[in-house]
Image 1 (cartoon, rainbow, N blue to C red):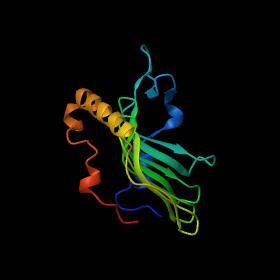
Image 2: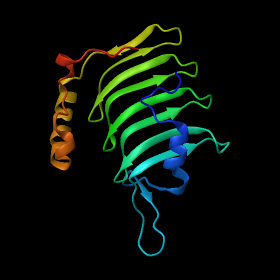
Image 3: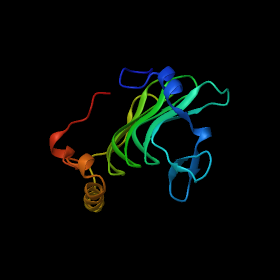
Length: 176
């Protein structure tokens, strides 16, 4: 699958983003930090970041961050330029649709995440045959989603309004 209009142009990414090599990853806190020149330590990164391949020119990843956490779009790209994975992230956890394609551009995974919990998915083999499917969250997963939803509303009240798992009743599967 080649770039679509709802994905960022790679020239835009390179001109407006920050190379992840210039940022610090704090694995303990799971944050991406921007080093500060002069006095003071690194600060949580907000903006667009990307990662280049070994050739130093091929974009293999780009994503947006807020306060050091992935937030917004996250796109991984095969070395041949085909999109590998595209997902939506909400303050560090998957929230929304995630799609994966093989190097030939065939969709091999379509899943929905709510507050980091995989709630439903379809997975296909290389021939395009459905090989696995999850149709909805378990009761335990619903309880986890509910707790995370409450935390999101507390931490990000303006953004979290409407984030729920009512998809089972109101949304169908998107087109491949």
